[in-house]
Length: 264
Figure (spheres, rainbow, N blue to C red):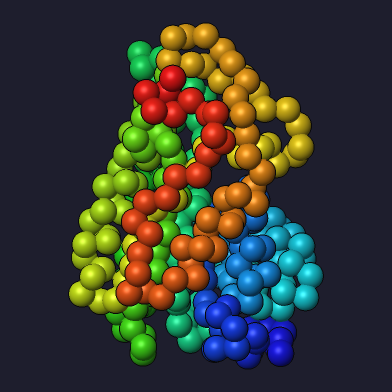
């Protein structure tokens, strides 16, 4: 059964006690799709993001499942705001079983010599520092709860492994997230915390519009293949559904014909 307001509901694994997830960047895009998929699978979900209205829209889109959602407006670049987010989740739901570190920032693609320092800082503050701050609070919660442990999934990108042209800030940030994932996975072992990363390429535009051309490694422009967002959420749910004694360390999901290895 479902009880509106974060009470008892059908469990994420077939009748067991419901599990609780925190999703950052839940006001749109992959974050919204992920939150809706988790709610649809029976999870209780804390929706985190900077825009309260967008979070409320996500909860409304969940229909009856929205009764298992709580909206917590949060700037993940602010350590106090992140601490307050996890405190609110523990107060409401009692524990944290999953953190999906999804929130990031986008800046214009430019040649290295033209990259604006403020754009660099915005990418690093959100994608790297924000991911770390949320992971740190998740570790604190997961180490203290009973039963202890949980799972963290970081949203990486193919750019964590192979860059695109004119994307030095984004590429550097995603490489940093990859290193963070590896360090968290190692340090989480002693506490029953499984940490992995999902790298997704070329999800179809959320507005249903055409895929814009992308610069290739040889400087030409091409419209690349896409996948529907459901391919991503299926992979996320697979990772989230596993017991914490098993881990998907890295999972890459992309169109079969998308340029990736060597970006060719």
